[in-house]
Image (cartoon, rainbow, N blue to C red; front, side, top):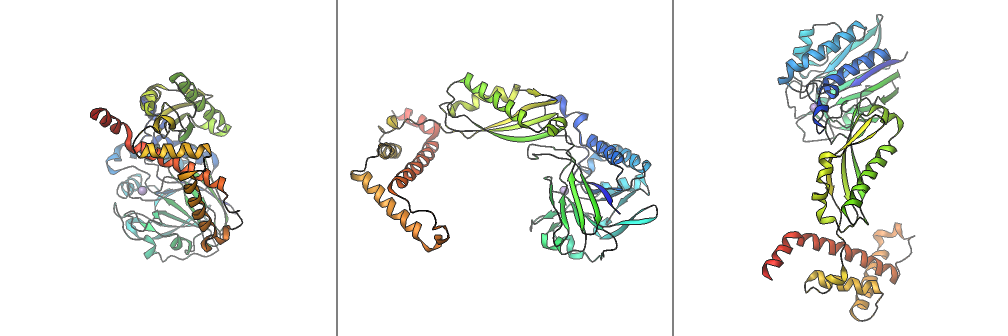
Amino acid sequence: MKVRVLATADIHIGRRPTRLAGAETAARYSCAQMWLNIVRRAIELEVDLVALAGDVVDHENRFFEASGPLEDGLIELAEAGIPTYAVGGNHDFDVLPKIVDAVGSEWFHLVGRNGRWEELVVAHDREPILRIHGWSFPTATVASSPMDDYRLKADDSLPTLGLLHADLDARHSDYAPVLREELLASPVSTWVLGHVHRPRWEPPRTGPGLLYTGSPQAMDPGETGPHGPWLIELHGPRRIGARQLAMSRVRYETAEIDLTGMTDRDELESHLTASVGQYLADLDAETLEIVEQLSLRLILCGRTPLSSQLELLTRPMVEQFERRYRGTTARVDKISNETLPVVDLQELSEKHDPTGVLARTLLALQSGDTSGEIGDLVRKAHTQMLEAHNASAYAALRSDSPPDAEQVRRTLIRQGRLLLDTLLAQRGPAGEVEELYYQ
Ligand SMILES: [Mn+2]
């Protein structure tokens, strides 16, 4: 028999996504609304149960704000005959037990109260269908692995779901640090984990599957990519499938835009607008259908004479830019300038400082000059590159042909440009002011 579970964690009821335009942080995209949407999806899908892996509620001081929507959802699920199993996380270790007791429903179970592992068996028409092993945070911080006390047993008579809020492979965490080996050595069919907001599913191989459901509602620019609850199907203790239902209507993304060749404000503006438009048009149809608010962080790269003015030139874009494509509205949350200035080597070569020396060397290398000092430099570099090429440590890469004089020259130019950009960036605007001052 197939068991279907709608699983999620880190709903953080009480919070709202950040960095959206004012009006849009309102009810429609709140985490409370996401919880109610998840409830309705669970009922539509007629799942056997809902599993919540902690941090369902954002904080104790959100008790009144959170308890209403949480209770409403639990009651809707109960009326549809769908039980809910939850463990407490570091955010709701205190408030979740209170809400469970307040609801007092046989349909809502807090598993592993007070940091004690607990096994519950889920039944359907009095037939056991699934075992749950769960552990709840007893306090806001837990600096040791909950797996140290895990003694529960499981066999292949029923699939077993491990429900835990924990920090995977973070040895010195205050939030229930667990090691992958500990989880994989346990007898459960799959772990459903909370705490990390980035979703990740590792199907079972030799041990259990590992699912970090991630936050169902994307809440800040760090939470990129699709977000939503997961539908887990257990066809038996070792045959498990899981897929994300990308329900978050808010999406945060980062896009890189190359500004090479841009020389004035108009060109820059139309290039940025076109690039964001293209980004939207390239999203797949399913994403466009779900995502209503796309919050973009742009990283500008390439080489442009506008490099030093970009903060000023792009400020209006961060404040006012808005572009729609079908039902999706894109806005720019932040622009990072990683462009490099266009360097005039000829002009720089007149200078009597390290950048001048480097500029003269680069001009000579680019001209193909092989006389005097430049010739010596190329020959020395060639000898050293051949030594590295023939070193026993790189024997496995020996199939590459040894560098010839032309490759050496090109490597020197590339490294010289990098060095020059680094020197110029260190000198920066402050250095220029200083120069003026002393002139
Ligand atoms: Mn947490």
